[in-house]
Image 1: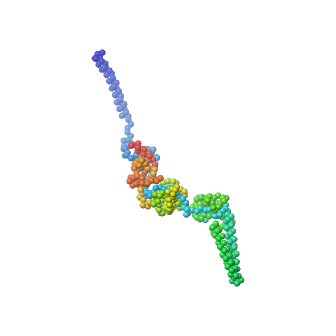
Image 2: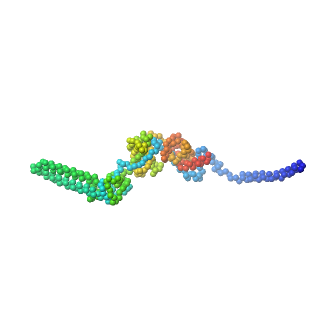
Length: 396
């Protein structure tokens, strides 16, 4: 094959391929032009919305996360002088009466139920007590004997004045009269101990009455129950619930803070987010060798009756010289290693993550140091902070 014939075939093949290449290039260019012409125009939000600054989250107006967020304002509060301590509300024993039957007997009727408010002297129960009937009979017998001895003494004095009776007999009559009076007084005091003066006495029925005003806290009695004065459980417990005791287990290291008259703040699970106050009355003289705690008793004003005995509480001792700092709910804090952050609302849909320092923390609140960068009244996210942190992480 000659060189000239080979070159002719190559030129012919080139002339056939060139139109195909040209057609392919024209097709690609047409597709690109069509896509450019029919592409969706950028939305106004994409054009106008600038990128959020670092540590800020801007949620869309219809973002579902907004429904899960809960905000609360940061407030000012005194910095607690101690860590939260275990405490328990109890009846104020100086305003509490535990009523046992003074005599053995059987309950005939009950006049008060648990929860009833009573005043001093209110009947609580009626007992059939044979010993009470015996006490009534003893008094009447002693009074009759005292009356007889007084008459005998009067006759002896008359006879002695007429020199018809020896002095020895007069002195014996005087001694008998004094002994009868003493026995009558003893029987009267015995009956007064069982039934207040002026009470109506009906045979051997003994009426148990309230010794003080308050509320019937507990009742361990039923009609027909046999009762004894040496029983282990009282029939009734009455207490004035307007005052309660707060018994605090104070750690050894906080012993210097507990002084009579010091203020105590405490919270209970029944009223989350609410604080109550008390004042220390007594501080234990020794440390419990088992728990290594010092018993402390504080007086609680419970005039509204919301607090109940035997509620558990978390208490902190207040220092009158304590600094006033910002306080936020612990649900607002996000802890990452040694760093603590929270989200602050800047606008309706704008939130900023800020780093804070915690001076003291309990189960409900965190007390921040002054360099935390918050102001009183700032709205912090107390629920849903993890959602905002996730949004911020995606943006980064």
